[in-house]
Length: 310
Image (cartoon, rainbow, N blue to C red; front, side, top):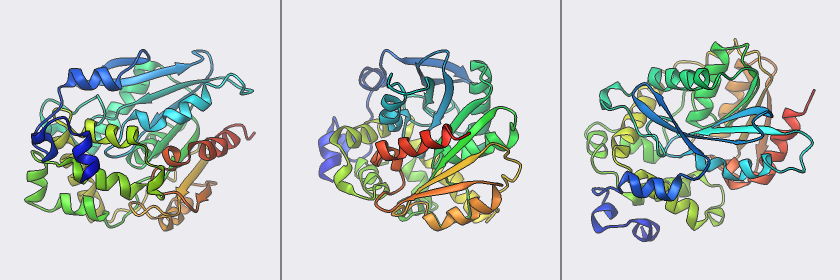
């Protein structure tokens, strides 16, 4: 609760009722690298950094997060000491970060997420790129790679969602009928703070800047509705117990997983390894659901080793 109170700008926002103006959020969380793209009636916030002629790498964040989760990877990939140069593209998935959701909340769906990402890639005219995704972003990445086998050069899935599972407690609570409708209007920051603590394997690694960012972006106008819609979408998907369907992926695939992940347990990696031909797995004993944010140097080193593997 203390984290939520400290990061909330008003008394009403402490209780999940108030919002932060989008102008204030843009001033804090957009930067000189920020760009905007119109897709499906939404303004996708993204960054296109590094060497414009380098190997493109596209990074997709997970649920309740934003492109900022990759900032330490971005710093490492733009290091001029690397043998190869990279063009790093990260985006705020519809419903999250500075992007926001569709004008009509009823239009939010899994197909909207997949179609919006596909259009995003098409407008950038990307081919033969490396794709990395975490959590929900891992699921979006796998779906894209399965349906566009000629475009993805290598695929990195970090604690990906998508295999049948029970939702973590906080998301399960928020998906309960009645509570889900309430969450679309009232999503207290202390719930977000609890979620951030859940996804780290070691809570001592949570910086104040990261905690503030998660809380601030949950106060973006429309964020509560988007969060509630996403949680309901995941609950519906999990209730169907549909197996993974990514056997058509042809890109070499690396799975990275935090062994302390309580949101998408590492045991689910077995289903991914069986479903994606030739995929490999690296696990991190002391990390949780967002190892690229929690232990960025180690995970980036492993990612680069995989990328450079001939």
